[in-house]
Length: 127
Image 1 (tube, rainbow, N blue to C red):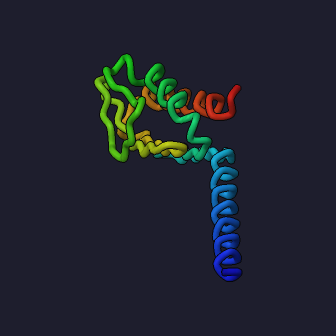
Image 2: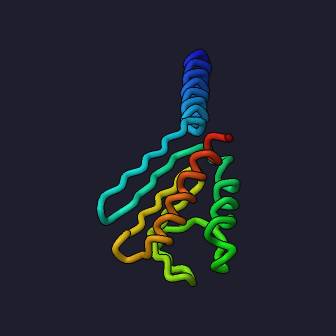
Image 3: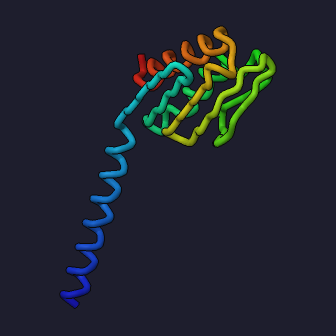
């Protein structure tokens, strides 16, 4: 009987620690931007609760003018918008990666995506 109490207590402690670690990681924010002569890339890991806000911001900046919505979507694809902007996007709750090939897009498309990515930083940070 004592062994089952000890085993149950240990198991409950392990579950609590696992949940605590997961909950803590969900509040970490990591955003990286890299740019070369030919590519622009942004990767972000953020609180899952900010996902809808990030997607709504993306809709406002890229989606609405191009009849696309990112809200409530999990995406891992290369998208081509109506204005011929083409980029890779991987988006899951709390994660976002965007890669744009500068050579395959206009300067205006590059600027629009870059400006959107800079705005995403503010959305994620809650500013």
